[in-house]
Length: 66
Image (cartoon, rainbow, N blue to C red; front, top):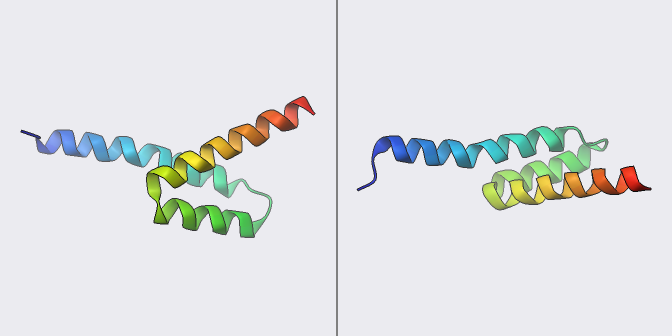
């Protein structure tokens, strides 16, 4: 049986990457990029957030090596 506490913990753990991805997307230089990432994160919350986080960190790594 799943308790209410377990459901709340699960939802909070799913919400953390979404909030982090929205913060990373807000750091974008271009407003259109933020709008596109924001819509993607809000329409497909967990997968969109993961894609945004991976995209941000991969671009950050390639900028340092160049």
